[in-house]
Image 1 (cartoon, one colour):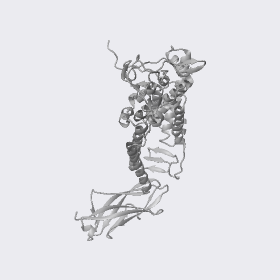
Image 2: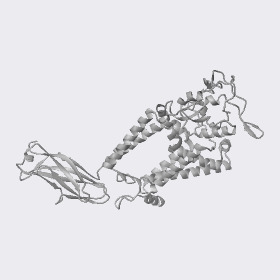
Image 3: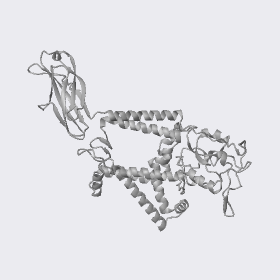
Image 4: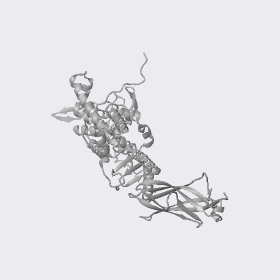
Length: 510
C-alpha cells in the first residue's frame, strides 16, 4: 500500500499563559486593531473641493490622501520609496531581533491571536478544547462550534468591511452598505476578505506561516550569530528532570533526570551532541547516560503547550518559530514555582554563549553592529530623500509635449506655427488662474486654443489639458531656422508660483 506524501494537519490548541511578553502582545494587538478599524473614521479638512477622510486611497480619481499629503499617479516613486523602506526595516529588525514582526505585528499573528481569544472564551482552555476536539459530535459540541464560528464570521466581516472604507468615503460607503446600494465591487471585496480572514485566522493559522509565507525562508539570510532570538539555554537546562514534586505543600525541583554522557561544561552540563529522536534531528543529550546533577528543565512541556506553532523550542532554532516569546513566559512561570532562576528560555544571541559558559555577563551588541547600522543608514537616507522630495515638490506643475504630426504649419500669410499640448496641474485646494507666457525670442507669439487670453482657469486639485500655438512671422529668425529654443512659463496668479518648461520651435529649415 502506497504511503501518502503529505501528513494531515494536527490541530494546535495553545494553552493560556500570562507574563510580560503575553501582555506586550495583547497591547500590540489592541493598538494595531484600533489603528486598522478606526483610521478610516478620522477626518481631515482639505477644503471644499477635496475629500475630508484622513487616509483615503481614491481609486476613482487616482489619488492617495494621507493627512496633509496627497500623492498623484505620476508620483508613484513615493509609494515605491515607502515599500523599499518597509523592506529595509524588515531586514533591520530581523537582523537585530529575529522575527519580531512575525511574532507581534504580522496581520496573520494579530488576527490568529484574536480568533484564539474567542475560541478560548467559548470552548475553554487547552485541555477543554482538546477534549471537545476528540469528543464525538453532540448537541453541546455543535452549539459551541456554531457559537465560535459565528463570532469568527463577525470579526471577518468587520475586517473586510473596514478594508473597503480605505478605498471610499467611509460614512457614505457605510450608508450604502446599510441600504444595500453599494457597488458590486465593494461587496465582492468584503466577501473575499471575509473568506480569507475566516479561513486563515480560524483554520489554517500556523500553516500560513509555515507553508504560504515566504519570509521564514528568507529570514535565514538575515540572521546570524549576533541576532537576538528566542532560544533554550541547553547548557543550563540539560539533563532534564522528570515532572514536579511537592513536599509539605511546596513545589520542588525533581531529582530524577535524563542522564547524558560526554564532556562537561562549567562542571555540570554536558556538550549536547546531535541526536535522532522520533525521526527528528535535535541538539540534545542522549538519554540514559550519567551526569553530575539535574539541569533546570523539568521536562514539563509548558513551553510546548503554549506555542501557537506547536513546536518545541528546546529542539533548537526552527523555521516555524515566530519568536512570539510565549514560551519564555511559560518557562519563567515554572522556574518561579520550582525556585530556579528565570531565563531558561530567553531572548539570547548565539554570540553570547561563550560568555555565558565562562559565567560572565554577555555583552550584547545585537543592535549596534555594522550590518544593522548599514541597514539603518540606508533606511534613514531613503526616508530623508522622500521627505525632502515631498517638501520641495511644487504645487503648480506644467508639462509640454510638442505636436509632431505635423511639426509645423505654414499659414496663409507665410507665418510658421507650431502646436504644443500642455498639461497644467493645480495642487491647491482652490481654483486658480494660470497665466501662460513665452520666454524667448520676441518674434515668437503664444496663443491658447479657444481662448482670447493667455490666462487659463484650473479647478482645485485637478489637471487640465490644453493646446497652445506658437507663431513666428515670415522672414524672422525662428521661422527660417531649423530649431529655436524657448520656454513656456505658467504662473499662479494668486500665489505667484511659476513653473517653466524648455522646448523648441521648428522652422522651415528643418
